[in-house]
Length: 187
Image 1 (cartoon, rainbow, N blue to C red):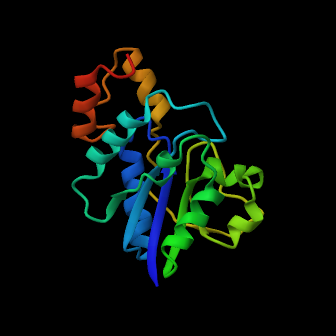
Image 2 (image 1 turned 30 degrees about the horizontal axis):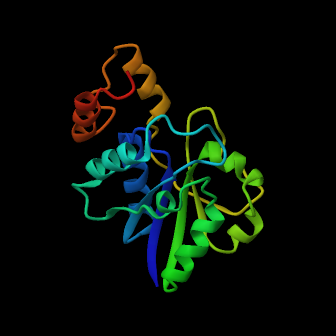
């Protein structure tokens, strides 16, 4: 069986916290790859700030120097709200010899009871929880916990810093920084 991690999100923009989480979980669980799956429209929060094409391009740039990090656009190809259960059904069908590990932050661990078809989803994928400031890793569901260095960075903080004309250098990969600056994003 192949062992693949999945890190989903809006990636609006992708930042070093995403990359650190993916690398730490990959190493801790001996995963072959981590697939980054940008959502078209998340069901649990407001629509992303940027069009999906910009988010995909920034993610492509962020992942380009790590062969184990793969951009997978399965959710953006469907458009509309992206439910994890639908994505997992498609992935199970397409990759029957793969064990998937769905990586989520502690904020989503707390929110798991509200996920669409969570009981069925729990039978399809192993959830992996990682620390996030201000949240606990507690759930009524069986979550595999991976201890990672605390990096308190979020996409919303980065967007706010740009609007406030503050630097985001070192919070995002250099290629993403150049893309944001070159396209005047989030201003």
